[in-house]
Length: 446
Ligand SMILES: Cc1ncc(COP(=O)(O)O)c(C=O)c1O
Image 1: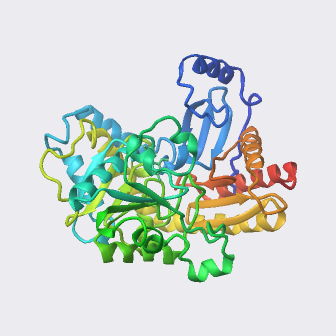
Image 2: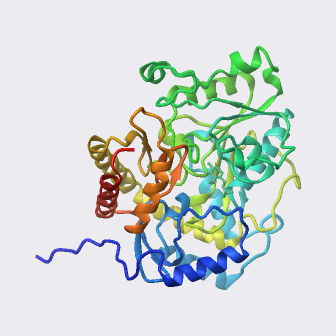
Image 3: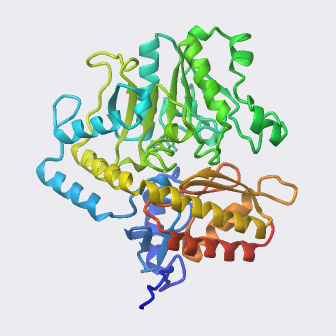
Protein backbone atom coordinates (compact mmCIF):
# COMPACT_ATOMS: atom_id res chain seq x y z
CA UNK A 1 0.00 0.00 0.00
CA UNK A 2 1.33 3.41 -0.91
CA UNK A 3 1.79 5.72 2.08
CA UNK A 4 0.45 9.26 1.64
CA UNK A 5 3.20 11.78 2.21
CA UNK A 6 2.52 14.13 5.11
CA UNK A 7 2.81 17.67 3.93
CA UNK A 8 5.12 20.04 5.82
CA UNK A 9 6.11 23.66 5.35
CA UNK A 10 8.74 24.10 2.65
CA UNK A 11 11.27 26.88 2.30
CA UNK A 12 12.98 28.16 -0.81
CA UNK A 13 14.51 31.19 0.97
CA UNK A 14 14.95 32.30 4.57
CA UNK A 15 11.91 34.27 5.73
CA UNK A 16 11.22 36.98 4.81
CA UNK A 17 12.81 36.29 1.42
CA UNK A 18 14.08 38.94 -1.00
CA UNK A 19 10.74 39.47 -2.76
CA UNK A 20 8.91 39.74 0.56
CA UNK A 21 11.43 42.32 1.81
CA UNK A 22 10.91 44.44 -1.30
CA UNK A 23 7.11 44.37 -0.87
CA UNK A 24 7.39 45.25 2.80
CA UNK A 25 9.55 48.26 1.97
CA UNK A 26 6.97 49.48 -0.57
CA UNK A 27 4.16 48.84 1.90
CA UNK A 28 5.80 50.79 4.73
CA UNK A 29 6.23 53.80 2.49
CA UNK A 30 2.52 54.17 1.70
CA UNK A 31 0.24 52.32 4.11
CA UNK A 32 -1.26 53.71 7.29
CA UNK A 33 1.05 53.45 10.31
CA UNK A 34 -1.94 52.17 12.34
CA UNK A 35 -1.66 48.72 10.71
CA UNK A 36 -0.17 46.18 13.10
CA UNK A 37 1.58 43.62 10.82
CA UNK A 38 2.36 40.78 13.22
CA UNK A 39 5.24 39.28 11.23
CA UNK A 40 6.71 39.69 7.74
CA UNK A 41 4.37 37.34 5.87
CA UNK A 42 3.74 38.52 2.30
CA UNK A 43 1.06 36.28 0.83
CA UNK A 44 0.91 35.26 -2.80
CA UNK A 45 -1.77 32.59 -2.63
CA UNK A 46 -3.45 30.09 -0.38
CA UNK A 47 -4.87 26.59 -0.69
CA UNK A 48 -6.79 24.86 2.11
CA UNK A 49 -4.83 25.27 5.34
CA UNK A 50 -1.70 26.39 3.48
CA UNK A 51 -0.34 29.80 2.55
CA UNK A 52 2.40 30.48 -0.01
CA UNK A 53 4.47 33.62 0.24
CA UNK A 54 5.87 35.62 -2.67
CA UNK A 55 9.21 33.80 -2.42
CA UNK A 56 7.55 30.40 -2.81
CA UNK A 57 7.76 29.38 0.87
CA UNK A 58 4.79 27.51 2.31
CA UNK A 59 3.23 27.87 5.76
CA UNK A 60 0.63 25.97 7.73
CA UNK A 61 -2.09 28.35 8.83
CA UNK A 62 -3.26 28.05 12.46
CA UNK A 63 -4.97 31.47 12.50
CA UNK A 64 -7.02 31.68 9.26
CA UNK A 65 -6.44 35.42 8.82
CA UNK A 66 -7.88 36.04 12.32
CA UNK A 67 -10.50 33.29 12.25
CA UNK A 68 -11.89 34.32 8.87
CA UNK A 69 -10.77 31.78 6.22
CA UNK A 70 -13.26 29.28 7.62
CA UNK A 71 -13.37 26.98 4.59
CA UNK A 72 -9.62 27.34 4.09
CA UNK A 73 -7.96 29.46 1.45
CA UNK A 74 -9.57 29.64 -1.97
CA UNK A 75 -12.02 26.76 -1.41
CA UNK A 76 -13.06 25.77 -4.97
CA UNK A 77 -16.80 25.79 -4.13
CA UNK A 78 -16.58 29.28 -2.62
CA UNK A 79 -14.47 30.57 -5.52
CA UNK A 80 -16.98 29.15 -8.01
CA UNK A 81 -19.93 30.70 -6.15
CA UNK A 82 -18.15 34.08 -6.25
CA UNK A 83 -17.31 33.75 -9.95
CA UNK A 84 -20.83 32.69 -10.92
CA UNK A 85 -22.41 35.47 -8.90
CA UNK A 86 -19.97 38.13 -10.16
CA UNK A 87 -20.74 37.16 -13.75
CA UNK A 88 -24.44 37.90 -13.15
CA UNK A 89 -24.36 41.27 -11.37
CA UNK A 90 -22.03 42.96 -8.89
CA UNK A 91 -24.39 45.33 -7.16
CA UNK A 92 -27.94 46.60 -6.95
CA UNK A 93 -28.25 47.62 -3.24
CA UNK A 94 -30.09 45.24 -0.96
CA UNK A 95 -31.45 48.12 1.11
CA UNK A 96 -33.58 49.18 -1.86
CA UNK A 97 -34.10 46.15 -4.13
CA UNK A 98 -34.49 42.38 -4.02
CA UNK A 99 -32.31 39.43 -5.09
CA UNK A 100 -32.28 35.74 -4.38
CA UNK A 101 -28.87 35.32 -2.70
CA UNK A 102 -29.67 37.98 -0.10
CA UNK A 103 -33.07 36.42 0.61
CA UNK A 104 -31.53 32.92 0.74
CA UNK A 105 -28.79 33.99 3.15
CA UNK A 106 -31.23 35.78 5.45
CA UNK A 107 -33.50 32.69 5.43
CA UNK A 108 -30.52 30.53 6.37
CA UNK A 109 -29.28 32.80 9.17
CA UNK A 110 -32.76 33.42 10.57
CA UNK A 111 -33.05 29.68 11.22
CA UNK A 112 -29.46 29.14 12.37
CA UNK A 113 -30.32 29.12 16.09
CA UNK A 114 -33.74 27.47 16.40
CA UNK A 115 -33.99 28.40 20.10
CA UNK A 116 -34.22 32.07 19.10
CA UNK A 117 -37.57 31.36 17.46
CA UNK A 118 -38.76 33.63 14.67
CA UNK A 119 -35.87 35.89 13.65
CA UNK A 120 -34.95 38.52 11.07
CA UNK A 121 -31.62 39.52 9.59
CA UNK A 122 -29.85 42.75 8.63
CA UNK A 123 -26.71 42.31 6.50
CA UNK A 124 -23.60 44.46 7.02
CA UNK A 125 -20.14 44.70 5.47
CA UNK A 126 -18.16 43.87 8.61
CA UNK A 127 -18.25 42.88 12.26
CA UNK A 128 -17.94 46.41 13.53
CA UNK A 129 -20.91 47.52 11.43
CA UNK A 130 -22.97 44.71 12.92
CA UNK A 131 -22.07 46.11 16.36
CA UNK A 132 -23.03 49.66 15.34
CA UNK A 133 -26.33 48.44 13.92
CA UNK A 134 -27.08 46.43 17.05
CA UNK A 135 -26.38 49.45 19.30
CA UNK A 136 -28.87 51.42 17.21
CA UNK A 137 -31.40 48.57 17.25
CA UNK A 138 -31.13 48.15 21.04
CA UNK A 139 -31.69 51.86 21.65
CA UNK A 140 -34.48 52.03 19.08
CA UNK A 141 -36.34 48.99 20.36
CA UNK A 142 -36.05 49.67 24.08
CA UNK A 143 -36.10 53.49 23.95
CA UNK A 144 -33.31 53.26 26.55
CA UNK A 145 -29.74 54.54 26.16
CA UNK A 146 -27.37 52.69 28.47
CA UNK A 147 -25.26 49.78 27.36
CA UNK A 148 -23.28 47.31 29.43
CA UNK A 149 -20.15 45.68 28.04
CA UNK A 150 -17.20 43.81 29.55
CA UNK A 151 -13.55 44.28 30.34
CA UNK A 152 -11.35 42.48 27.84
CA UNK A 153 -14.01 42.87 25.14
CA UNK A 154 -13.25 43.58 21.51
CA UNK A 155 -16.07 44.61 19.20
CA UNK A 156 -14.39 46.47 16.33
CA UNK A 157 -12.97 49.81 15.29
CA UNK A 158 -15.86 52.20 14.62
CA UNK A 159 -16.93 54.73 17.25
CA UNK A 160 -19.67 52.70 18.93
CA UNK A 161 -17.62 49.52 18.83
CA UNK A 162 -14.49 51.14 20.30
CA UNK A 163 -16.63 52.52 23.11
CA UNK A 164 -17.66 48.95 23.95
CA UNK A 165 -14.06 47.71 23.67
CA UNK A 166 -11.98 47.25 26.78
CA UNK A 167 -9.12 45.03 25.70
CA UNK A 168 -6.37 47.48 24.68
CA UNK A 169 -6.22 51.18 25.54
CA UNK A 170 -4.56 51.98 22.18
CA UNK A 171 -7.84 51.16 20.44
CA UNK A 172 -9.49 54.14 22.15
CA UNK A 173 -6.67 56.53 22.91
CA UNK A 174 -7.22 60.07 21.54
CA UNK A 175 -10.42 59.11 19.69
CA UNK A 176 -12.84 60.58 22.22
CA UNK A 177 -15.39 61.73 23.03
CA UNK A 178 -16.80 58.25 22.74
CA UNK A 179 -20.40 57.09 22.99
CA UNK A 180 -22.03 58.14 26.26
CA UNK A 181 -23.83 55.72 28.59
CA UNK A 182 -21.55 52.70 28.19
CA UNK A 183 -20.45 50.79 31.33
CA UNK A 184 -17.89 48.00 31.66
CA UNK A 185 -17.94 45.13 34.11
CA UNK A 186 -15.39 42.35 34.64
CA UNK A 187 -15.81 39.35 32.33
CA UNK A 188 -15.99 35.92 33.88
CA UNK A 189 -12.60 34.27 33.66
CA UNK A 190 -12.44 31.09 35.71
CA UNK A 191 -8.67 30.92 35.21
CA UNK A 192 -7.83 34.51 36.10
CA UNK A 193 -10.75 35.84 38.06
CA UNK A 194 -11.01 39.63 38.00
CA UNK A 195 -11.77 39.53 41.72
CA UNK A 196 -8.81 37.18 42.43
CA UNK A 197 -11.11 34.44 43.64
CA UNK A 198 -9.77 30.93 43.89
CA UNK A 199 -10.11 28.99 40.64
CA UNK A 200 -12.22 26.27 42.22
CA UNK A 201 -14.56 28.85 43.74
CA UNK A 202 -15.04 30.53 40.42
CA UNK A 203 -15.74 27.38 38.48
CA UNK A 204 -18.50 26.32 40.79
CA UNK A 205 -20.04 29.61 41.86
CA UNK A 206 -18.73 32.18 39.45
CA UNK A 207 -20.68 35.37 39.72
CA UNK A 208 -17.49 37.39 39.31
CA UNK A 209 -18.80 39.31 36.36
CA UNK A 210 -22.44 39.09 37.18
CA UNK A 211 -22.13 42.00 39.58
CA UNK A 212 -24.60 43.94 37.54
CA UNK A 213 -27.37 44.19 40.07
CA UNK A 214 -24.96 44.81 42.93
CA UNK A 215 -22.48 47.13 41.21
CA UNK A 216 -24.68 49.10 38.85
CA UNK A 217 -28.38 48.88 39.58
CA UNK A 218 -28.29 49.57 43.31
CA UNK A 219 -25.78 52.42 43.22
CA UNK A 220 -25.50 53.97 39.76
CA UNK A 221 -28.66 53.78 37.65
CA UNK A 222 -31.97 52.00 37.29
CA UNK A 223 -32.20 48.84 35.17
CA UNK A 224 -34.98 50.32 33.07
CA UNK A 225 -32.42 52.73 31.61
CA UNK A 226 -30.40 49.87 30.13
CA UNK A 227 -30.95 49.01 26.47
CA UNK A 228 -28.57 46.09 26.06
CA UNK A 229 -25.80 43.93 27.37
CA UNK A 230 -23.19 43.22 24.69
CA UNK A 231 -21.05 40.18 25.38
CA UNK A 232 -18.78 37.81 23.51
CA UNK A 233 -19.94 34.35 24.63
CA UNK A 234 -16.29 33.33 24.32
CA UNK A 235 -13.93 36.29 24.44
CA UNK A 236 -11.75 36.53 21.31
CA UNK A 237 -9.22 39.35 21.22
CA UNK A 238 -9.31 39.49 25.05
CA UNK A 239 -7.61 36.07 25.26
CA UNK A 240 -9.88 33.27 23.99
CA UNK A 241 -11.53 33.12 27.40
CA UNK A 242 -14.30 30.64 28.12
CA UNK A 243 -16.51 32.18 30.78
CA UNK A 244 -18.14 30.12 33.49
CA UNK A 245 -21.42 28.93 32.00
CA UNK A 246 -23.28 30.35 34.99
CA UNK A 247 -22.08 33.81 33.97
CA UNK A 248 -23.90 33.68 30.63
CA UNK A 249 -26.98 32.14 32.24
CA UNK A 250 -26.97 34.93 34.85
CA UNK A 251 -26.77 37.54 32.10
CA UNK A 252 -29.77 35.94 30.41
CA UNK A 253 -31.68 36.02 33.72
CA UNK A 254 -30.84 39.70 34.37
CA UNK A 255 -31.93 40.60 30.83
CA UNK A 256 -35.19 38.69 31.21
CA UNK A 257 -35.89 40.31 34.56
CA UNK A 258 -35.39 43.89 33.34
CA UNK A 259 -36.34 43.53 29.63
CA UNK A 260 -32.79 44.29 28.53
CA UNK A 261 -31.60 43.02 25.13
CA UNK A 262 -28.91 40.34 25.37
CA UNK A 263 -26.58 40.68 22.39
CA UNK A 264 -23.99 37.99 21.66
CA UNK A 265 -21.08 39.24 19.60
CA UNK A 266 -20.25 36.05 17.70
CA UNK A 267 -18.12 37.75 15.08
CA UNK A 268 -15.23 35.49 16.11
CA UNK A 269 -17.00 32.54 17.76
CA UNK A 270 -19.69 32.06 15.12
CA UNK A 271 -20.06 30.02 11.91
CA UNK A 272 -18.99 26.63 13.17
CA UNK A 273 -15.86 27.58 15.08
CA UNK A 274 -17.19 26.09 18.33
CA UNK A 275 -18.58 22.96 16.65
CA UNK A 276 -22.10 24.36 16.19
CA UNK A 277 -23.13 27.21 13.94
CA UNK A 278 -23.04 29.61 16.91
CA UNK A 279 -21.52 29.46 20.41
CA UNK A 280 -25.00 30.30 21.73
CA UNK A 281 -25.95 26.73 20.81
CA UNK A 282 -22.69 25.20 21.97
CA UNK A 283 -23.10 26.86 25.36
CA UNK A 284 -26.88 26.51 25.55
CA UNK A 285 -27.70 30.17 26.27
CA UNK A 286 -30.00 31.99 23.86
CA UNK A 287 -29.52 35.72 23.27
CA UNK A 288 -31.99 38.14 21.67
CA UNK A 289 -29.47 39.13 19.02
CA UNK A 290 -26.47 37.39 17.46
CA UNK A 291 -23.85 39.34 15.52
CA UNK A 292 -21.71 37.52 13.00
CA UNK A 293 -19.07 38.34 10.35
CA UNK A 294 -15.50 36.99 9.91
CA UNK A 295 -15.88 33.31 8.93
CA UNK A 296 -19.32 33.70 7.35
CA UNK A 297 -18.10 34.13 3.77
CA UNK A 298 -14.56 32.67 3.95
CA UNK A 299 -13.03 36.15 3.69
CA UNK A 300 -15.51 38.12 1.62
CA UNK A 301 -16.68 41.23 3.53
CA UNK A 302 -20.09 40.57 5.00
CA UNK A 303 -21.63 40.43 8.47
CA UNK A 304 -25.08 40.09 9.95
CA UNK A 305 -27.36 41.14 12.75
CA UNK A 306 -29.64 38.20 13.52
CA UNK A 307 -32.40 39.31 15.88
CA UNK A 308 -35.57 37.83 17.28
CA UNK A 309 -38.44 39.28 15.27
CA UNK A 310 -39.86 40.59 18.54
CA UNK A 311 -36.86 42.92 18.98
CA UNK A 312 -36.09 43.82 15.36
CA UNK A 313 -38.77 46.46 15.45
CA UNK A 314 -37.08 49.39 13.71
CA UNK A 315 -39.09 50.93 10.93
CA UNK A 316 -38.60 51.40 7.22
CA UNK A 317 -35.57 53.61 6.50
CA UNK A 318 -34.24 53.64 10.07
CA UNK A 319 -31.18 51.59 9.10
CA UNK A 320 -29.60 50.67 5.79
CA UNK A 321 -26.37 50.16 3.86
CA UNK A 322 -25.24 50.61 0.27
CA UNK A 323 -23.07 47.50 0.11
CA UNK A 324 -24.27 45.40 3.07
CA UNK A 325 -25.42 42.04 1.72
CA UNK A 326 -23.67 42.53 -1.60
CA UNK A 327 -24.77 39.71 -3.96
CA UNK A 328 -21.26 38.31 -4.47
CA UNK A 329 -20.65 38.22 -0.71
CA UNK A 330 -24.06 36.58 -0.13
CA UNK A 331 -23.17 33.87 -2.67
CA UNK A 332 -19.83 33.30 -0.92
CA UNK A 333 -21.62 33.13 2.44
CA UNK A 334 -24.18 30.58 1.22
CA UNK A 335 -21.40 28.37 -0.19
CA UNK A 336 -19.35 28.77 3.01
CA UNK A 337 -22.25 27.88 5.31
CA UNK A 338 -23.12 24.75 3.34
CA UNK A 339 -19.48 23.56 3.49
CA UNK A 340 -19.30 24.26 7.23
CA UNK A 341 -22.61 22.49 7.91
CA UNK A 342 -21.26 19.36 6.23
CA UNK A 343 -17.96 19.57 8.11
CA UNK A 344 -19.45 20.13 11.58
CA UNK A 345 -18.74 16.63 13.02
CA UNK A 346 -15.09 16.85 11.84
CA UNK A 347 -14.74 20.38 13.27
CA UNK A 348 -15.65 18.94 16.66
CA UNK A 349 -13.43 15.85 16.39
CA UNK A 350 -10.37 17.65 14.98
CA UNK A 351 -10.84 20.28 17.71
CA UNK A 352 -10.89 17.56 20.39
CA UNK A 353 -7.78 16.02 18.86
CA UNK A 354 -6.02 19.39 18.91
CA UNK A 355 -6.93 19.97 22.56
CA UNK A 356 -5.73 16.47 23.54
CA UNK A 357 -2.40 16.99 21.78
CA UNK A 358 -2.00 20.46 23.31
CA UNK A 359 -2.57 18.94 26.77
CA UNK A 360 0.35 16.59 26.07
CA UNK A 361 2.53 19.60 25.24
CA UNK A 362 1.29 21.31 28.41
CA UNK A 363 2.77 18.44 30.46
CA UNK A 364 6.10 18.80 28.64
CA UNK A 365 6.50 22.60 28.60
CA UNK A 366 6.19 24.61 31.81
CA UNK A 367 5.56 27.76 29.77
CA UNK A 368 2.04 26.53 28.90
CA UNK A 369 -0.50 27.70 31.47
CA UNK A 370 -4.22 27.44 30.94
CA UNK A 371 -5.68 25.64 27.93
CA UNK A 372 -9.27 26.43 27.14
CA UNK A 373 -11.83 26.50 24.41
CA UNK A 374 -14.06 24.30 22.37
CA UNK A 375 -13.75 22.71 18.91
CA UNK A 376 -11.44 24.91 16.79
CA UNK A 377 -11.50 27.95 19.07
CA UNK A 378 -8.69 27.12 21.50
CA UNK A 379 -6.69 29.50 23.67
CA UNK A 380 -3.29 28.49 25.04
CA UNK A 381 -1.99 30.84 27.70
CA UNK A 382 1.76 31.14 28.27
CA UNK A 383 3.06 31.91 31.73
CA UNK A 384 6.26 32.73 33.54
CA UNK A 385 7.52 30.62 36.44
CA UNK A 386 5.46 32.71 38.89
CA UNK A 387 2.28 32.15 36.85
CA UNK A 388 2.14 35.71 35.47
CA UNK A 389 1.46 36.28 31.76
CA UNK A 390 4.53 35.73 29.52
CA UNK A 391 3.79 38.51 27.02
CA UNK A 392 7.22 38.88 25.41
CA UNK A 393 7.64 35.11 25.23
CA UNK A 394 4.48 34.89 23.12
CA UNK A 395 5.82 37.50 20.66
CA UNK A 396 9.05 35.52 20.35
CA UNK A 397 7.07 32.33 19.85
CA UNK A 398 4.99 33.87 17.04
CA UNK A 399 8.15 35.05 15.25
CA UNK A 400 10.00 31.75 15.70
CA UNK A 401 7.03 29.69 14.54
CA UNK A 402 6.79 31.88 11.45
CA UNK A 403 10.41 31.13 10.52
CA UNK A 404 9.58 27.41 10.82
CA UNK A 405 6.45 27.66 8.67
CA UNK A 406 3.66 27.82 11.24
CA UNK A 407 1.36 30.85 11.30
CA UNK A 408 0.25 31.70 14.84
CA UNK A 409 -1.59 34.69 16.26
CA UNK A 410 -1.72 35.94 19.82
CA UNK A 411 -4.53 37.54 21.79
CA UNK A 412 -5.04 38.79 25.34
CA UNK A 413 -1.90 39.32 27.40
CA UNK A 414 -0.08 36.10 26.57
CA UNK A 415 -2.34 33.69 24.74
CA UNK A 416 -1.98 32.03 21.36
CA UNK A 417 -5.34 31.63 19.70
CA UNK A 418 -5.64 28.42 17.73
CA UNK A 419 -8.24 29.34 15.12
CA UNK A 420 -7.23 27.39 12.02
CA UNK A 421 -9.37 27.01 8.92
CA UNK A 422 -12.28 24.75 9.89
CA UNK A 423 -11.33 22.26 7.17
CA UNK A 424 -7.97 21.52 8.80
CA UNK A 425 -7.14 17.81 9.11
CA UNK A 426 -5.69 15.85 12.04
CA UNK A 427 -2.49 15.33 10.05
CA UNK A 428 -2.13 19.07 9.58
CA UNK A 429 -2.81 19.68 13.28
CA UNK A 430 -0.09 17.11 14.09
CA UNK A 431 2.43 18.85 11.82
CA UNK A 432 1.63 22.27 13.31
CA UNK A 433 1.92 21.03 16.88
CA UNK A 434 5.24 19.33 16.12
CA UNK A 435 6.54 22.73 15.01
CA UNK A 436 5.07 24.33 18.15
CA UNK A 437 6.80 21.68 20.26
CA UNK A 438 10.15 22.44 18.57
CA UNK A 439 9.68 26.17 19.13
CA UNK A 440 8.86 25.71 22.82
CA UNK A 441 11.88 23.43 23.30
CA UNK A 442 14.11 26.03 21.65
CA UNK A 443 12.68 28.89 23.69
CA UNK A 444 12.80 26.99 26.98
CA UNK A 445 10.77 28.05 30.04
CA UNK A 446 9.24 31.54 29.91
C1 LIG B 1 -15.64 39.58 18.64
C2 LIG B 1 -15.40 40.58 17.55
N1 LIG B 1 -16.33 41.51 17.29
C3 LIG B 1 -16.19 42.42 16.30
C4 LIG B 1 -15.04 42.44 15.52
C5 LIG B 1 -14.90 43.46 14.44
O1 LIG B 1 -15.03 42.86 13.20
P1 LIG B 1 -14.52 43.60 11.87
O2 LIG B 1 -13.03 43.66 11.97
O3 LIG B 1 -15.05 42.76 10.76
O4 LIG B 1 -15.11 44.95 11.88
C6 LIG B 1 -14.05 41.49 15.76
C7 LIG B 1 -12.82 41.49 14.95
O5 LIG B 1 -11.81 40.95 15.30
C8 LIG B 1 -14.22 40.54 16.79
O6 LIG B 1 -13.30 39.61 17.05
